[in-house]
Length: 130
Image (cartoon, rainbow, N blue to C red; front, side):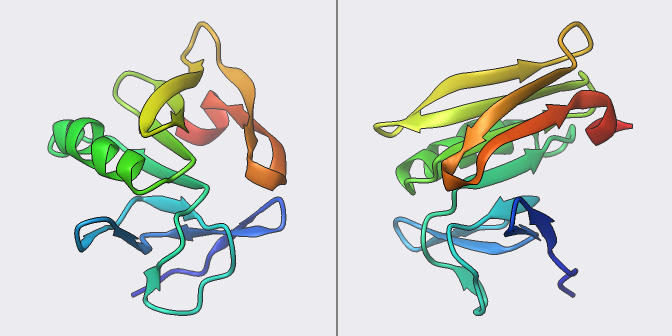
């Protein structure tokens, strides 16, 4: 069952959306911020942002295999939320490689990142994790 999307600066943030990737792959990130409104079963245009929330059982899959597939799929940003380590890492796609853009943890709990044409997005670790 699909939940109602949240709004992020005028764009719909889709929880659990099917994202089409190269080599006939489909992944379901925890949250997707598409470039344009999506009406079908799949996000076909590479999204601006995908977010993965790590758990012990998915940690290596999310940080290794999925991250490569997302980079190859021309996704602009990959956000990794790690509740166990209380951190959020934001990476930008630079020619198929992930470059660190923002790191939040308890020592640096807030920051901002530019998301496509959405502009600056403020992130607060406590608001997201607590």
